[in-house]
Image (cartoon, one colour):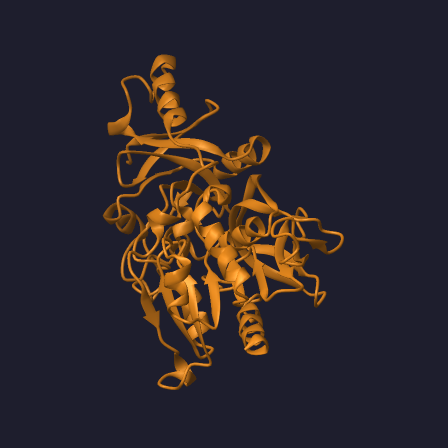
Amino acid sequence: MRESALLVLEDGTVFPGRAWGKRGRTTGEIVFSTAMTGYQETFTDPSYHRQIIVMTAPHIGNTGVNNEDNESDRVWTAGVVVRDPARRASSWRATGELEDYLVENDVVGICDVDTRAITRHLRDRGVMRAGIFSADALPAGAAAGNDQSLDILIGLVNDSPAMAGADLASAVSTPSAYVVEPRGAFEGKEPVARIVAVDLGIKNRTPWQLAERGVEVTVVPQSTTLAELNAYNPDGVFFSNGPGDPSAATHEIELLRGVLDEGIPFFGICFGNQLLGRALGFGTYKLEYGHRGANQPVLDRETGKVEITAHNHGFAVDVPVDEATEAPFGDGRYGRVAVSHLGLNDGVVEGIRCLDIPAFSVQFHPEAAAGPHDGEHIFDRFITMIKEVG
């Protein structure tokens, strides 16, 4: 029998369950992911820094963990909430069990809770802060529903930092630059382009996607200056996904404006999409409960095709949808901007394209880790744009 544990939300809602993963306590913004597969990629995605993830799929851990699927060098999620954890891994690729992996990476979790009820609550009330507390971290009487003890836990949750206004990219970025050479059929050959990727929480699969297309990718820290970036003489610049509030990323926004001013082709994903929007002078806003999962339909307005895409974002860009509009910032030097992609579930902007300068971005994740693969062609668009400019 597992010891008791509690999931406590900042609005005072409490869900009793059983301890899973590391025992102890953790707090963070609680969000839900609708992905049915790829939990190892999800937990190692730096964009989930300081977030507790509710997995809506009922069975988690069936395929265990392995040494190949991590999207970074550590687990970033602050906590994990599942309904039915697998008793044992049943995949030929598995090298370990998920719960052992979470324990090794100091991730507190809870199981045997109604994840459907939690998800419905977050859809109704919006994402909020939460805490997971296993038995050893509970004050006396909390497990039995003692009001005074529960008030202590709710206070701890409400004392934890909010996501709005959080500047987190520096906490997840690489400390030093590194190079990913062309791969596959392009290995050992002259690169088709040299790109600088600013790491705001980059996933491993992103530079791999570019390298498999013959690109040499230099991944640089979030703190990189425009002068340092220019020293690489890049053919293009890429801004990655990452955690936090884009309105707080003042250094990154100024760096991106410098890239745009110099006419260097630019491509951004997720957080990079939000930063392009802010660099152009548009606003961003926090979604009520965000998009997180691997099954989000997006309309590519240029081709008219609907693509099923992977998402992980709690913020979105506020850009006029109906027609192209001049960028509010820059006294006209950035020209017109159009919405290139729309989320079909709720109409959220999922991509923007500059019509007069070489820059575009998408909110979803085309690197396809762990899938789906519909959006991978976006990397080809970036390479095509670089060749057209060059």
